[in-house]
Image 1 (cartoon, rainbow over the protein chains, first blue to last red):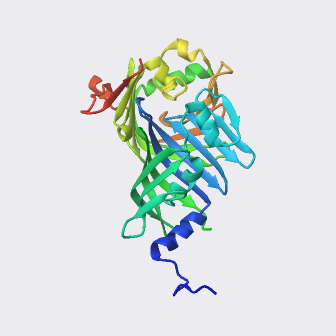
Image 2: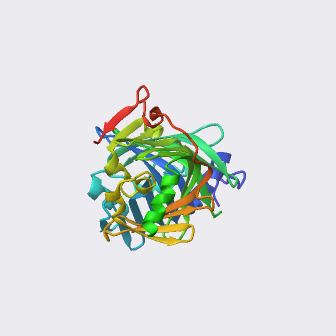
Image 3: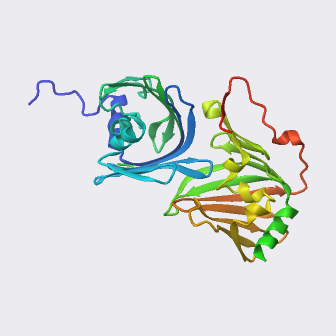
Length: 182
Length: 182
């Protein structure tokens, strides 16, 4: 038996929430994403992100038109761009890198967006919510600030994130979280 | 024929204001985006589309220039009217241009009109417009060829509204980035 038997089975408060958030893998987000790549004009898109286990389907619309759709499942990734052209690759991260030159850590982002610092260091506020996440993914530095949180079905989830990679910035405003309890 | 009948109905509401609520549905009919706000239209080609919820966004046209203002990224994009309205409801709601109308086939189903582009490649598969017995416009929808449908319901419909020209001019706020794509 381990000499370091923990006094109680219950994890520390902020970590109880963390395990629940990490296990959450059936959820949807409605929000707005601002993309400001270095030296380029910012773009604001409405975003719908549906996550089901390992699979996700993200749809970006602008006013009335779908401008980008990306899906990933165990077979691979599919993307339909602004001109309606379809692209395929082993995974969405590769696909986006191929099309834009930008390495987006999508696997980690599936956790970061819930405030779970996968492959990263994090700082918590005194309610146990993650407010900063720092990571190096494929030699790329990512600094996340989680500036707002919202309550949903007893869980506290981010409602306002900014993701900075060098002088590229993503700002995500989340209007609505819906999910099935794990 | 149905096209003339629709244009006559639209002529009767050549100036109107209304509140709108919008739902964007994906292929399986799931709501992936929702918005609401205020709409003003004044023939020819002038409109003001103010999204208030979940986030402010404004699309404004004086008939020549269309301003798309997104406070979320502190930027306003300027577009030519023709480029901006293609594939949006404003093309038909605000246009009195015969050349535009000739590109569409119109079928009347009592108070509802179904408008299909003659060009098979058009990104929009179909518009619909619904009127009530008092010939007030109560709703419209856009179905994208490859994907989603945007449905709009109008309320507080007022076709007696009078507008000043300045109602369709945009004054660029301090510090807002201008992205002129004309």
